[in-house]
Amino acid sequence: MNDLQKGSVKPQEAAAGHPLPGRGQGRILMIGAGGVATVCAFKIAQNQDVFGGLMIASRHKDKCDRLVKAIHDKGYTMDIKTAEVDADDVEQLKALMKSWQPELVVNLALPYQDLTIMDACLACGCNYLDTANYEPKDEAHFEYSWQWAYKERFERAGLTAILGCGFDPGVSQAYTAYAAKHHFDEMHTLDIVDCNAGNHHKAFATNFNPEINIREITQKGLYYEDGKWVETEPLAVHRDITYPNIGSRDSYLMHHEELESLVKNYPTIRRARFWMTFGQQYLTYLDCIQNLGMSRIDEVDYEAPLADGSGKTARVKIVPLQFLKAVLPNPQDLGEDYDGETSIGCRIRGVKDGKEHTYYIYNNCKHQDAYLETGMQGVSYTTGVPAMAGAMMFVKGLWRKPGVWNVEDFDPDPFLQVLNEQGLPWHEEFDKDIEL
Image (cartoon, rainbow, N blue to C red; front, top):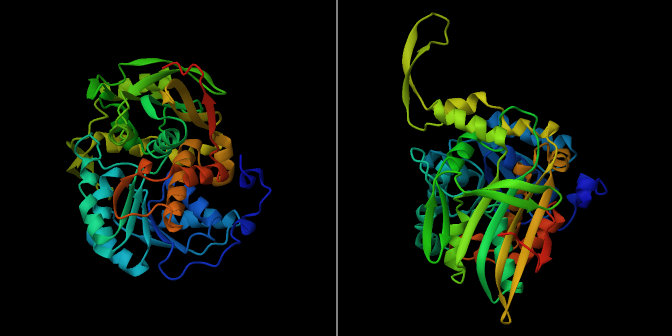
């Protein structure tokens, strides 16, 4: 827990520091106003000596205004602008970027919107950062190829694009880069382990956007071994893994995007896997949702009554998963009653000076600590803090180079130091049984 979480530093003191950068320098346009964006905005407000201004934009401006009020109600005094924008519309994005003139666009919208936002950044000369890679709206499939294809365009424009700067992806890659830099000559196996041992006291809820969450976990599993990608049926491979301060939890092998870049950037890795915990109640509800067809992402025709009370009907097209999202609890509203904690880290085997070693680097985050600071639960917190930290790395000039990059392409040390200071301290264990 950092000093801000302990309450020993007043918000006004957190805002003191160096003079603000000049016009455009350090100015952030943040797109999105959900749970992750809320945490990121709080953290920017706590570090306004670094950032030269903040605008929050979303499809619904009133959400942005409520977020700004929540920040000000906590005593932070940063002047934050708000705007309405449709992130699917490149022309609207361009108009907003030309008006606000941000140096960096922090994309915390939906993964479907990554490419339109990147297109607008290129058109307006803005740098770019996101927390999740692109996936097409009509296909539950995600990989970096679509965004990596922008590399030469960003290079020619002299602009930096930082991909996947949340926790996983994001911090998981910085952990791996830190291990490679400080503890291994070669890394041979990598297991990213993600446990949420919290309880939100709801029958069924997702910790971030239900549509994105359910699309992700119902995909086939994928891991890397001996130079090949191995596919598994969804959630078919699982085993017990022990997490610090939590204990043993059933953990499921999944496909996760950071594996794609990590095995590319660290070719000595022979096997790379990603594991995530799920409770049996969650999986039972998920199975029911799938069996009822509510996880479908294709359109279905539906005869719906008109909202004018006339009794007349009209045929409309709905996407079952989007309808399900509308009736499930909002992840932003889970924090108040959420107890327990998350534990996310990397377990690595490799060689240093000719000897085999194991290494485990991880963070545990308590949901109530996150809620008391930002009003959000720990899953939003563990993604929103790294987004701010990555933006800080860019603004300070530590993570800047033309092109499209993943987190492990940059020096992990200053980034991890910021995480230590901003509420996500990390811990290391050497040469212990890593179970995997």
